[in-house]
Length: 320
Length: 128
Image 1 (cartoon, chains in turn orange, green):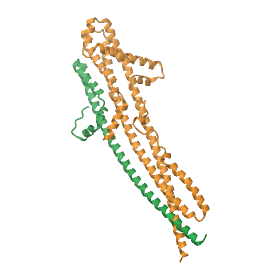
Image 2 (cartoon, rainbow over the protein chains, first blue to last red):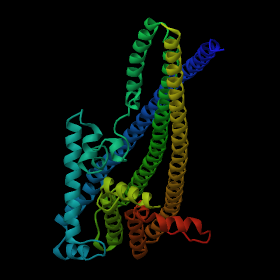
Image 3 (tube, rainbow over the protein chains, first blue to last red):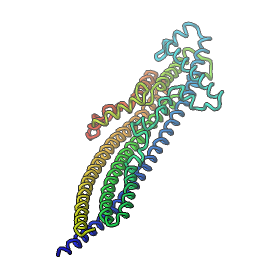
Image 4 (tube, chains in turn yellow, brown):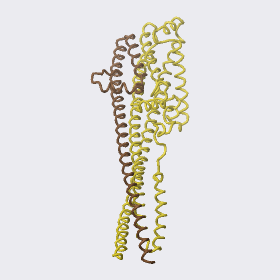
């Protein structure tokens, strides 16, 4: 009977070793699966960041278009209005000018402001047209629209990951190193002959454990990426709303601008008559006042500071 | 190797194997628990982000639509005032346009909780 015990024990060792080998195979499978999960997640994150950058650049371009519209309006419309006043001022008597300046919506101070606005527009307009390469971007920056955009890198701007978390940071390198060590240990065990079975089983269980850990790390990374991608999608939606605001302001400027141009056409078509044209002149002045006010309005908050507005929104979000 | 030595060696090996097996079982269980927790955190975080996103976009969409309608109506008043020469009315309509333009639709987002309450209230009157 005593001779049977080693056989039973040997069979038990072999059975456990076989089970360990199966678990080891499972462990390798899990490690590979973890690597694939990590790589797929990383790819998704990279794509989301790249899409966000594309949207951001599109919003920047829209802001530049609005900036160049402002320059044209300042240069052509406000400038034309100022020139008109200067023209009639040269011909008008002091009492006429006093009368005009006394109309509601027109003051000497406002006229000075319009002149400055028009001059700024003219300078930028000439600067842009004289250097072909500068394009609308220079103009847009000069009127302070585009500079509220684009100076901050997009991911940081929205408080998102600025860099990708690489798969190697999942602890995969640790797993790989262990596997390297493991195979050496297994090699030693083969040389050891008799200890081969237990060593395989021990290695199998250890690999299986490492596989479970790798799978957890990969899932953790994948979950973080999924949450981050959801935030990026939210940021992209927000950019679309910022674009809507830019379009809103641009439409208002265009609407007012076209009305000013029509009225100025009428006023300029005949010699200015203080009594007959005063009402029309006042209409132009009121429209110009609105135009200048709207062009002063920043795209986002009262300080024209996109960052603080977004930071504020984000801060409020978190408390919901 | 004597029989006794082989026996001792086999028993040691079996003991070692069993120890490693239980160690593996413990790790596997711990890791499964961690993965369940990760899944729960992920679901909760995604649901929260979605709720915030829906709230923000719904508010801004409504706000911009309403503003667009108001601007259109105000420009109708502007055109009528220009045509009839009613400069007082023109001034008032233009003031309303500039005031509305200056009031950023993003400004109210600073107080999202009130927006949330307003969205939940079907009788809330939206003024932009």
